[in-house]
Image (cartoon, rainbow, N blue to C red; front, side, top):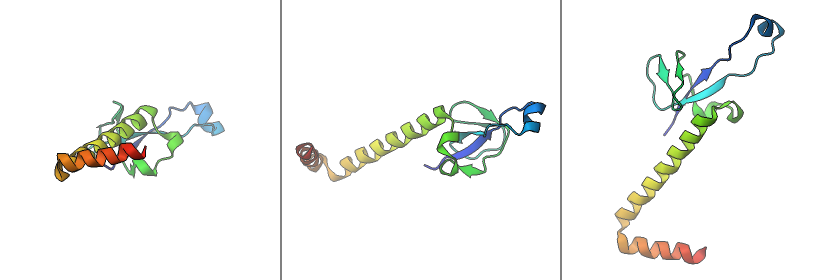
Length: 105
């Protein structure tokens, strides 16, 4: 699944903006496009539009909670796809395949 990303812009004081010492925006993951306000995976509500994908953001600038949730969702999706594939090839073939994998490890 492709996630979109919305920025959380840091609040700046006038002095910080004049000195140009502002940190980068933190990016939050959004499961699907919707009109503003957008609720992200971690619960942050943004009034900005999602104009990038999650893969286009810098890893250091990502929200840690959103990063955990997206990776957990990817692992769960992979496990579901593997379970569906095992159901398709049948229980006997799946058991033989599991034994082969266990023997190699």
